[in-house]
Length: 231
Image 1 (tube, one colour):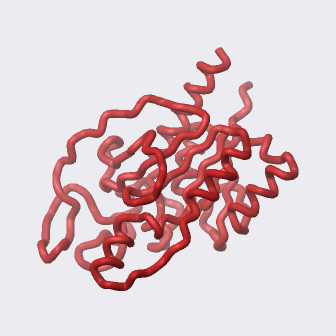
Image 2: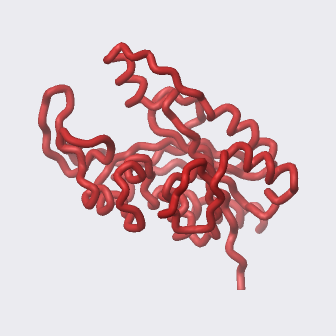
């Protein structure tokens, strides 16, 4: 019987990425600085970078085949940057992408860094969209792949607009806006259905989550790439 590969899920939030890896056949361990009682797998509460450093120092990182990291993106997220600029807020946020990458390189393991569209400085080795998986959200996300690669999937044409108000215009469409509240944004049940997330009904967790379909695709792609290396 083949032993399941193990993935470390850093900055895990409530487990959108984790569930996708699980569906791809991985054993998942999560880490987040906040209490995440809805996280559906083994979980360590603490600073993700401190925890990763500890795993490297103790050698326990060797139990993992892959590390996934979704560092906070406020410094580069297009929504945050645009809102701050339009409102004149000039908010500053810590960029955790660079120190995360530095530690991931130190592990010697294959890794994935996930970020939304925006100014975050990562390679866009993969860009995934809900339309690729028949979902009710677009939720574009970029992924930098370290020490492994896979072909980019074709980005299909969107079928219409995201439902809701934007720039004073109200539109209907086949996708819901799974962020914020009001202005035609999705309800909690709509977000759950649109992203394929059933284990949490906390709005803030849903608005931060990526659909499990994304990391199920990535996990399967990684398994295929790994098999080809060791074939």
